[in-house]
Image 1 (cartoon, rainbow, N blue to C red):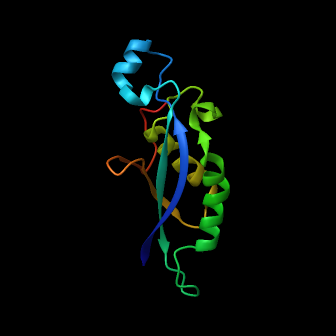
Image 2: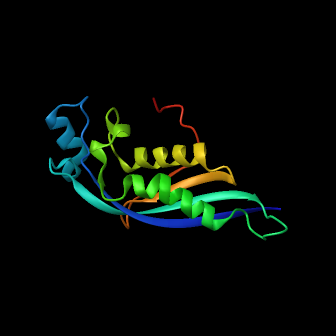
Length: 140
């Protein structure tokens, strides 16, 4: 029997959407108010979905203490209260929530082995959320 576990976390971070490959005018046209030179912030909601067989002894897909500890150490403490533009992983790519979502998926996939990572969903605002569930051949 395979079961799915969805777990939610919250963190806050800021960013400026700006591509070095585009002119100032193209950036303003593409990103609008999100291209503000001073940046802007979000209170993100991160949803992690893992799956696996239900352990007969514990009755769980994975140990929630272990999942929470891993997400806290590797994701929340990394991004919470940070300006994403200043972080190493965003020196070559625009720190959109789409790219942040993919990055979080990759961190979780590399390091959390107790259950199968199904997807990462990142809610940026009440109106915008992004989801990633595996490798993207378009990403360089």
